Length: 113
Length: 116
Image 1 (cartoon, rainbow over the protein chains, first blue to last red):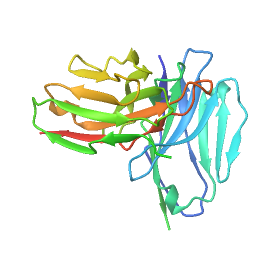
Image 2 (cartoon, helix red, strand yellow):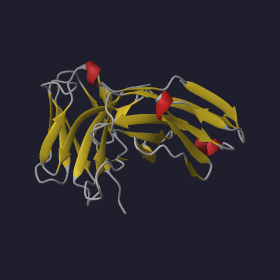
Image 3 (tube, rainbow over the protein chains, first blue to last red):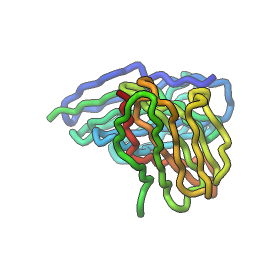
Image 4 (cartoon, rainbow over the protein chains, first blue to last red):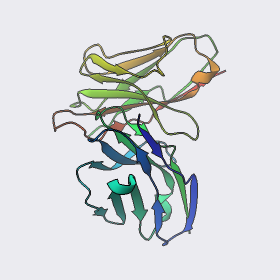
């Protein structure tokens, strides 16, 4: 069985602070894929990143960075210098099959001016 | 470049009525997915099509639910004899297997169903 845990339900930060969203996963599969999606107040899920289980390199994209550690089964997401537009619910997801995504419950991020 | 579209965006119905939702995927995408999202939860997988074939169905998809993708393009999700517990956002997503699979799923805006 696969499971994704996002222990942080809500996070509130002041603009320009750095914030890390935690994601811990469970799977027995040796090949799997991890994702992060953003769901802004408008409601539409937006893809952020995909990582496969064989690639543990961290990735940076602008103000976003991801830290994948198989040893701790974690795939954490950091936003540097947060902005009000980053306010959204962020979901971590896992799949072995490539189609049925198993989502966590999400972390609601509020960035205030 | 049009994304995934869903119709209607909102549906209010009375318990016991049947409802049908439509999803139009991104035109070149051959994979289509349905998810359900309730308040405060992440989306839950319901079913998956590759072209017109329905290849996977979740246990969440009870006998009252049926999905089709007759020509491998748009898809419909029908709920018969709706119950209040069916109230949720129904999300459609699409992706392409032609770029090696495991690609990101592009989500539509969803159909919010309220069962009174």
